[in-house]
Each structure stands twice: as C-alpha cells, then as structure tokens.
Image (cartoon, rainbow, N blue to C red; front, side, top):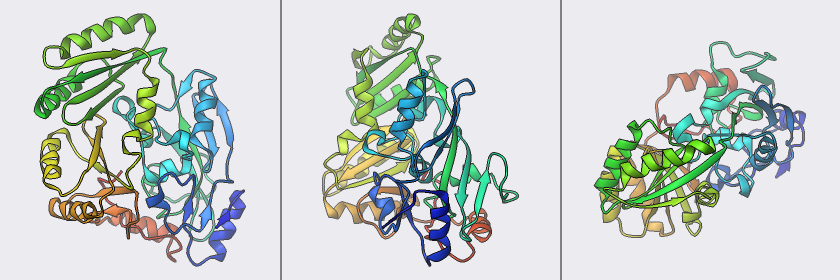
Length: 363
C-alpha cells in the first residue's frame, strides 16, 4: 500500500490510478477493506488558535495528538471521537461520521466541522467552508463529507471548532430493575434542565449519566440528579470518571467481538430491538448511547451476520459496519439520493472512488 506524505502525493495517486481507496489509522477495518492509499503520513496540526477555539490539521493527524494539544489550553472536542488512543485519525473520523457518547449534549462531528480540503476524482484540490481554492457551487461541502466514506473524494485537511473543557465531571450509574423502567428514565432525563454530557444504556437497565461544569456547582447538580433517579434505580456515583468514558470511547465492552456495527434508532425502538435480539441464535453484545439514539452491536458468531442483514431488510433500516468483512460497509437497504448523484457527477464523474451506497440513517 502506498503512503501519502503530502497533499501532492494524494493528487498524484488519484491521477495515476484507476481506483483509489484511502485509509487512515485502520481503527475501523470494515471501512478500510481493499484500501490502497494510506494517509497516515499526511499528519500534523497546520493552525491552532486557542483564543479563537479553532484548529486546522491534515487528515492523517491522529485524534490523540489533537486531544493532547487542546488539553494544554483547557479545550476539547465535545463530540468525543472514538478510538482516539488506538490511532483514529481526523479524516477517518469525518469520513466515517463517528462520534462518541459526548455527542449527547453538544452534537456530533458534523456540528464541529468548519471546513475541509479534499482531492476530487480529477486530482484537483477543493476547499469547502473557508477561502475557496476551487468551489463546488451549491454544496455545503464540509457537512456532505461527514459519513461520506470516501465516496466523493479524499479528505486531506479539516478544520474544527472546539470548546472549553469542563472544570469537573462526575458520573452516576443508575441500575433500574427492568428495561422499560430504564427507557422511562431516559425520557425523563432528556427533559431535565441539568445539561447532561452523556447518557448511555447498558441493557437491560443500567444507565450511565455524566455531568460536567464548574466544580463548585457540580455537587448540587449531582444531588438533583440522584433525587430524580433513586426512587426507581440503584445509584452509584463516580467523581473520578475518566476511565468509564475512556472505555466507552474505545468500545471496551466489545473488545472480543470480531464484528461491530452501528445502528441509529430512537429510544422507543430499544425494546423492539431487544426483543428481536433475544430471539437470535447467538450472543450479541450491545451498548446504547446518545440517549438511546445509537446502538452498537458486537458479536463473533457468523450466523448473527445474516440474521442482522435480514432484520435490517425487513425493517427498512440501515447500519454502518465497523469491524468484520462485508461486501459494503452500509448494511441494509441503500438510500436513493439525488443530491448524492449530483455531487458524484461534480466530484467524481469518472468513478475513481468506490461507489458506496449511502443511507441517511447510517451516520
């Protein structure tokens, strides 16, 4: 596999190859099967202005490097990009459209991406969201690159806004006796005025709730949160909670699973999905995050793979494969998207990049 060290290297690869598929840190192997161009050498922070809460970096820059630099100035990426310590890159995070549990309060990667530069199917450099090098009129290019899976071009540079890191954080674990009780608590928490940072569900009834902010005010907020939950759940409080969310960000619960997929849903879908999984022939690990709006499913039994595909087809839902070998990373029915077709015609009319069928629920 060729490794690009400069943007010019990427342009040359696109111009001289019939097909190009890029990879970054390789933390999402189902998305990098068949890759022939590594962006791991295209790394480095190009510009960072702490006073403006923005930075620009090359696409192969490890997320961990950015996290470390931001922390020196008391700042962070609130959307909590997964697999940072395992080598995930900024470009791969954008292309996969992946956010972590921290997306609950402030939004996902799409909400923090300010600009991109990418190489199109002609090998030309295009900028969106900043000073224009070559403009693709009528398209909000940065937003369209989130979850694009390399379909339209190779992202070579990204710009993000960042936030001040909370002064202190704490996590409450609330274990409800039943799944329906846990879902009802999620509904109540979604309406409470406590500015929750994270809200995850570990079935059947264990909720993980994170709050953060000014240290002096945190105790009172934890007390209010506990009072909301303690009548229906067993409560434990963790004021040193970094390890809890580090494990969540790295899918520690699925570390032994050969397959891992992401499925968007809504909290009311959770009981129906749990009932389906209970009928599947094999063990499926799962973790619901972002207030029950995303579930990740992990397994090792090959029979589960076909069962999931059939379930998605029947339900008319799509999922994104992160681990395992699949014919395409989008599972379930594809989305018919005229905007996508227009963008392909503008950026990759010759078909240099893999024509992955996208789905609006996959990112």
